[in-house]
Amino acid sequence: QSALTQPASVSGSPGQSITISCTGSITDVGGYDYVSWYQQYPGKVPKLIIWDVINRPSGVSDRFSGSKSGNTASLTISGLQTEDEADYFCASYTRSTTLVFGGGTKLTVL
Amino acid sequence: EVQLVQSGAEVKKSGESLKISCQGSGYSFTSHWIAWVRQVPGKGLEWMGSIFLGDSDTTYSPSFQGQVTISADKTFNTAYLQWSSLRPSDTAIYFCARASLLPTFHDYWGQGTLVTVSS
Image 1 (cartoon, rainbow over the protein chains, first blue to last red):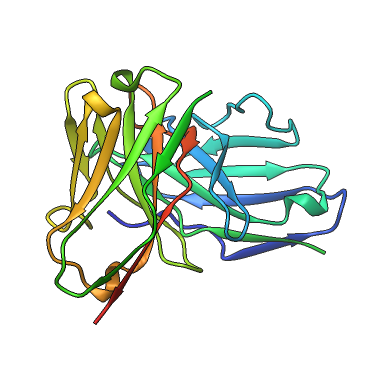
Image 2: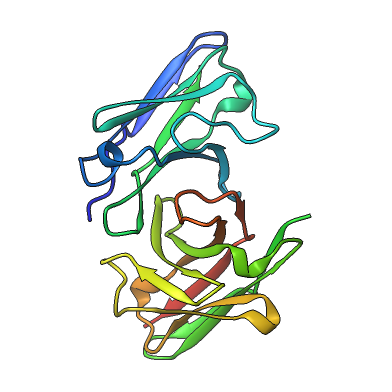
């Protein structure tokens, strides 16, 4: 199974909104509403920020939102803050009852 | 409080065997999956496989099938990741992570175990 496709980097200014895409296929992203997103700071443990496409764990800011259309899922961060600068990874459940991650996107807050 | 505590860093030589561990606490261990995720420093996350602690059902990524073995001991609330013959390309940080009844997302993560393999 191939990794999901994410842009290598995105950037935005404080206060702006950005969207990170995550493209797979009908056997993963398109076939299930089981996309999750993780935030990871350098040298730190990944943190779950979105599960099952649209749900936020308790304690995660409502500036983070998820969506999906066809084989592409998206993470939107609104009201960008400097603390949002991190790496973001999507993941999807697959037809093979496994999980597959995206390659990761580095978010830079200018 | 849910916690996953992993064993410490390892330095090994090519061809040696290794078993690292992940001990859970603060939740019903047998009601959840535990996955292993690899991260080469500076690179992305790679899902390796997972085990359901209730019945030891195990699933592997095709990329890691046959390369590693995932196991668990319910008595000690512990999951394991094992190699029979390490390679320098196995040098990475290995995270364990909890999932629920389906291995669809991971809500709690261990602190990571750095494995360094020299040739």
